[in-house]
Amino acid sequence: MYIPNKPAKYGIKLVLANDSHSKYLLAGIPYLGKLATQRQDGQSLGQYFTKELTKQYHHTNRNVTTDNWFTSVPLMIDLLENCGMTLVGTVKANKKEIRHMMRVKENRTPGTTAFLFTKELTLVSFLPDKASKKKVVLLMSSMHTQPSIGPTHKPEVIEFYNKTKGGVDTFDQMCAHYSCGRKTKRWPLCVFYGMINAGVINSYIIHKENAMKRDDTYLQRRPYMQALALALIKPWAEQRLPASNLSRQLRILICTVLDIPSPGTLASEEGPVAAESSGAFVRCADCPSGSDRKTRHRCHVCRRPVCPRHYYPACTDCM
Image (cartoon, rainbow, N blue to C red):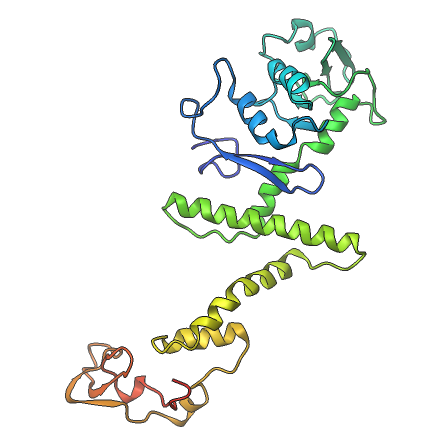
């Protein structure tokens, strides 16, 4: 889908839930569109995604921090009464539950805050003191019940929101910073790359947290990813290495990655020797057609004709 105000404007949209402290990915749901999303009658998309993503944490007295695409009065009451969770989030000014006096900034002093309370919810209307800020900041909370102002002269609700809002965005930035994705036109492969990125970050977070609990040193993210990649490919590479039909280039590459001696590399310095002879002269498969170099030697593996410039000696153990 296309989202013009995002850094990556095109892509497959996934709705995620992350831990606000460690940025660990907790759950994710692909966005299939308004019509394709299976939801109850009268349930908004924001309400559906929030309840589904937090289902395993219901009745744990945890808090959810959301942006204005999710936040609504029915969602906050539903989470509080039926799911045992609170919610803090920004809210759009055009919501029908927002009173007009909380939306306007006329006759209000910059840097001031207005509170509106119900039995379950708190609405905060903050007018920034900066001249560049032209809009009133609106937040709703089912967690806060007092009109508290923090040391930065901002409402406590806004300070709490700023501390806990960056889980998903930070996780997305981490995925983009060191990504294993490759250019592709196949959307399943694109999703697979995203799953690998998410798994790598989650595993790194676990590695870091465990090391900190043991008062031990932990790897930085780049060395950790290199060690993880080597650990993932090493068993399969070792299994493929003895295969007789493995090409020489791939065999050398595997030996380089595994940091073991490469068979045939020293023998190649001695110069070419006779390969398997086929009798008839044919054009070398590796020489350019303009040279028209003929040979009657063939590779014993792929049976391609090769001239002395394109084959190298190797003993039977190295082959």
